[in-house]
Structures are given as structure tokens and as C-alpha cells.
Image (cartoon, rainbow, N blue to C red; front, side, top):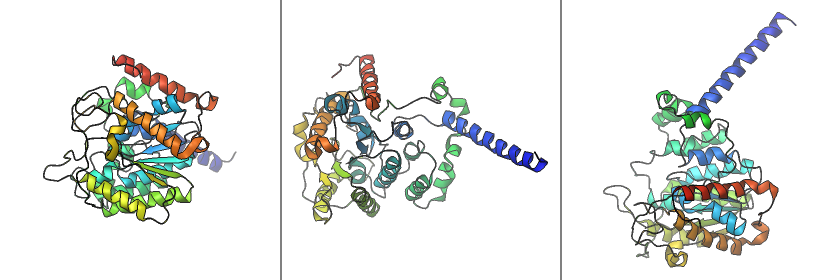
Length: 361
């Protein structure tokens, strides 16, 4: 072996060791959050081509859409690929990433964020870390960050590469950071049960006014529609039930129902809307039996559904999805070996319920 060959091998090995070390450090130092980061990271551990329904949207999704209930009651293999205050441009790139590893037949898209948060929302970057840190590096991630950062150099400086955003967590590391390294997250399906109670007002639609969301939201809604059309995926748009118009920013009047009204008209106006189903849940919220005023089914002041509320909504959702798309698009996979991770998922959720001294339902 020549000296030149040995030098090349030494350089290649050195680079491989450096990259491997950085990868290990990245996995250990990365912030752990079930408000988007874990949902993103665990997606890569899911058994290939097993997820039939992917849920996109804000924290209302991973608190309110109970994937254990969908599996236990209907055999629907679903995954909550959501993140805190997820805007539609993040949802779009999430969908593209998801379809690299899965072949979903149905996309469920929650419309809370585009209705509640406009371009002048002062905290629009507050949950950016939850939205991007679990994502593997790729051109898709670069495009997503470019869409999310609105041309602001300070955002690139803070979040790219992602490692730079949390490299200073050394003094905050806990045992969980090390135990989670190399952990198989295939039995995590995105859902996070909440075990709190809060009293809020039941949602009511009180206006016929129609207001469009931001231009950017409209642009990416159309991109999601076009992507699902081009890939023969059914698009089911919903609103996970919550108390509408909870103030998100002082001095900013919430007009979410007017944007839901706009969405209803917008979908009807499209020429290529055959693959789109919009369930305007707030108009028939009584169908879910969710108790808002007494707080039985609500977890907090932002009216996220708690464990009991998530079951009520997910039982309705599972029935509606099965009726809308049938057993051919949404097969019952219970008992199939390739889907055993969903059985494990149910056990994990039920153990959390018991640990919280709540009733398993």
C-alpha cells in the first residue's frame, strides 16, 4: 500500500470519526420535547410503509387525536406528526418528509394554527425549535427552514446547523438524555395524553363573516392540496375541538371562526377538490360529547383536550374516517405482525393513564 493511499484512508477515517462523534453528541444534546421534537424524531423509527393516516397540525393534534384509540377501536394505523403552533409551511414540508418513509392513504390536517396566528403574531418563532430540531438534515429541511425564517438572518444563525442551537446544554444534561440515545421509538405514535382538568367556554360560531388567513398560509394550503392530489392521497381537513377565539396576543382580536368560514368556501370553490373533505367540527361540536364547561374533557386554558376528551374526539374521527374512505384505504391491521408496535403503543398509553390515577378507556 502506497504512502498516498494510507494518507487518503487516514483522512477518510478521521472524517468518519468526527462525523460519528458529532452525530452521537447531537443525539445526546438535542432538546427532548413531546411538543414536536420527539414526534419528528420518532417518525424515522416507524416500520416502513405501515402508516395509513398521518395527522398534521398544532399541539391540538398530539394532545387531541388519540392514536391508541384509533388503533384499539378501528385498527387504523395513524401517526401524529404535529408540533406546537405548526404553521402550514411546516406542515407542507413535514408531509414531504413523511412520504419519503411512508405511503399514507389519508392526510388529516388540523386548521387551528392558520386560523389563530397571522403574520403579525409577535411570538411566531417561539416554537421553532419544536418544529425543526427532530428533523434529519436534508434539502427538504433546508427548504422548510427557508420558508419558516422569512429571510431573517438571525434565525439562520440561531438554528442552522441545529447542533449550534443546543450545543451549550452540557450543564443541563440529565440521565434521560443518555438513556434516550439509540432508543427505538417505533411504539411512540406522536400522541401525548394530558391528565389535567380545566373549565372553558364551549366553542360557538357567531358570525357569517369570511376572512382569509395570511397570504403565506393560503399559498401553502394550496401546496398541500396539490401535493396530495399529485400523490393520490386523500386530504381530510378538520378542527380538533377547542374553545374558539382564546386571545393569543394582547391587543389582537381573534377571528378564527371567520377563517374557518373562509376555508369552507375556499374548498368548495376549487375545481380539483374531489380528494378534499372538510369537517367543520365547531358547527356540530355537540356530536362529540365533549364537556367544556365542567372541564371533564379539557386539560388547560388553551382548551387542549385531555385524555378523556381525546378519546371522545378520536372515536368520532375514527368512525368518520372509516365511513369516508372505507376498509380499502384504511384497513384494520389489528393482529398483523408488522403492526405490533401499535399494540405496544396502546400498552404504553394505558400505563401512563394508570400512573396518573385516571381510568383507562
